[in-house]
Image (tube, rainbow, N blue to C red):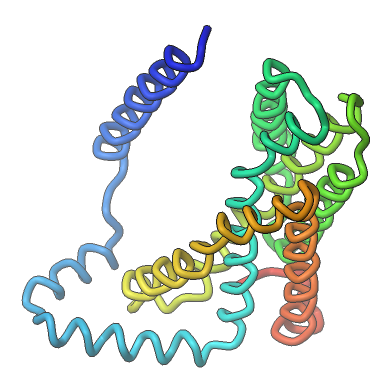
Length: 255
């Protein structure tokens, strides 16, 4: 299959899957009591009142030190993910000389590992150890990128090992990171807080492609060195969060 039919097939599959998701969510999910109440309250609200609320919520968000740590970790995670998704295929083909046909093997390995862990390992994990799992996931992802940086062309074993480690790290961190952000927000102001955080995240990760392009021009491995730095910072921030904001007898639960 050539490029154009493959892209057409990809868009067709995306259309079917996203349409099915839309109807499935509409059929099987319901708005929470808090969501219904906030929707009713917003019907009688004014634009000026909404702007005042967003201004107040923004002040409260920046005053919430534990949330800001989690938010910084989330931004770093999104930053490195955007950079890796953009440059990984180029790095494999141009620098590690992986065949164009073999590149499709790595997303398949990632999906298989994540599905296996989601059904076999994740249900056995305890919420009380969420911070430990995130730190461990960041460490696995860091190791995965270190292998990529020092990998010599032609060895599929180490590339597959790196892919497995990256998938394992992602499944350990992403869900808990999303939950950590959500649980750090006030229920009464969750919608406004998420809106503000989403805008801030987009602003922070917008330059990732440009930064990655400059880094790749210096050397193909430099973007992945930046990704390693992002994971090191994430580990340091989570250790700080655990030591400073969790009780001494806590195993790592985020509430």
